[in-house]
Image 1 (cartoon, rainbow, N blue to C red):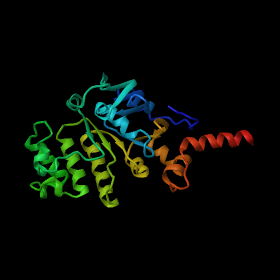
Image 2 (image 1 turned 90 degrees about the horizontal axis):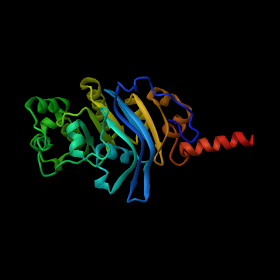
Image 3 (image 1 turned 90 degrees about the vertical axis):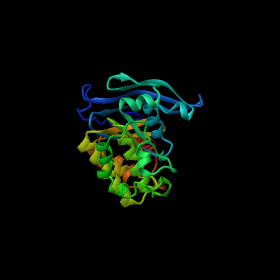
Length: 278
């Protein structure tokens, strides 16, 4: 898909119907029945791949994740149009307890863990029976959590809380993880370590990941496929390699300060006018 004059970019051939785990078509989400947050968004998540959705604040990134995971009702939002298919099955409007059972597990922006429970108790509070091997898998991935397994979550650092959120998500046996703003509020080194762990989950365990992230460069370097969203619409898409090497994406998402940059769509409109007037 290409909107508002964006240069056409082809998503890799790995997004064929047979390979698709998640397919979102023409998604439209409205808040309080009046404010349209997402307008005609389409994206694909192939099996075993990592896809990132990037864009400025308020662009609709989190709304897309909530619609997929079934959390729109909790946010007084309505899916007014479009399709959401997971493993070929229509899941539009399905409540989160059902999507989780199907293998779609969310790691939300504001980490949802129980502050009064210990690390170990949080992992057992997912609603899924957590076997010894699964618990050991979390400890192996996050040795720091093992060291603090009997500590109440309220005493954890921001990075440890994100580790715990990822660990709890793993205990739900996901095929697809929806991760919202993994690096939010974290020191760069901690964020980098978490990004590497997420990629490890993708590569070694075959978990597909849809990552929403404000750190555009880190997200694109991590993912296989990228989508750029502005004002509720996808304005650019393609392999991460192509997006990282594209001049417009580099200029307006990867290499300029907020004070100087405009939106991707504004730039395209400006360039069209410039060509028209000579």
